[in-house]
Image 1 (cartoon, rainbow, N blue to C red):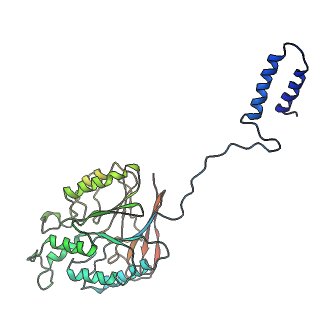
Image 2: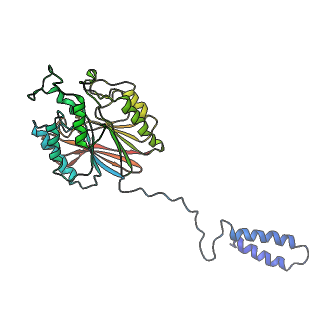
Image 3: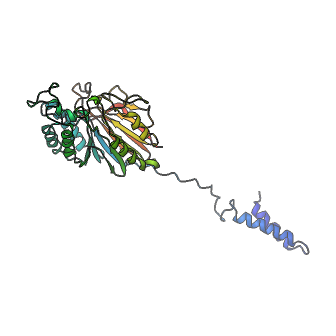
Length: 351
């Protein structure tokens, strides 16, 4: 079958031989030839016509922006070597890990009583390993020194035993390297980490019990800190005590001013809240709560995870988190045998 372009050329040649009023027809057909040769369906001589190009699909990065371990509830105490042994197992795994570890977060209850001797022991243990930069927030046990009398015995009758919550905060801040306040935000590999801390305990506010109290100052700071996330970049917020049911404030063993906390985070997408305190095992339990506007994951415990490990011994668990440009991956880790925990892995797409 003759092509359209070839037909037009032949017809033009025929018209050129015709005398008189064929000029208008010639011009019209010449325009058609131009369209045929230069239009979207035209192709260079001797080459097949190309299909319309498809829009390029961005390549998904294989490496995460940030990878970190969250070690919660270590409960280090000079009176209990079991906690020390478990922390050694965790730090051996972290320092010799087969994937990147850009930072380590200590998620509250670093110590069992918050004594100077407990922090010195914790420092000696951590100094044995080559670790990246370490950050942390306070838990309720980091204030427990007020319960101990001059003989080191637990005494509720004489509490606060000549001590204050301010002393506990100072010891924590000196250990972790914070200057003025027990809470902080940092950017690591362009990922925002926000560490919120319990600011006081029962010596300063008797009705908090084992709950986490955040002052107006800290909550205002959190609200201001979150404003940079209007563009949807992920924010990782660390708390110690878990949240109560949506729509309520918490009491003992919960985040007390939860309503205000949720209001601050509600306008932003891609917010991840990581908590500890409960010591729940990753084995057989769901640690991903989807009842909030943010993604909430509850960590297990290095020192006192409930239940036993797969090998039958006492368990020591933590959380490994990888932040990619398009998703966040959270995995539960068993440190006693350096294994991943079945069904304790979640991949959350960023929106």
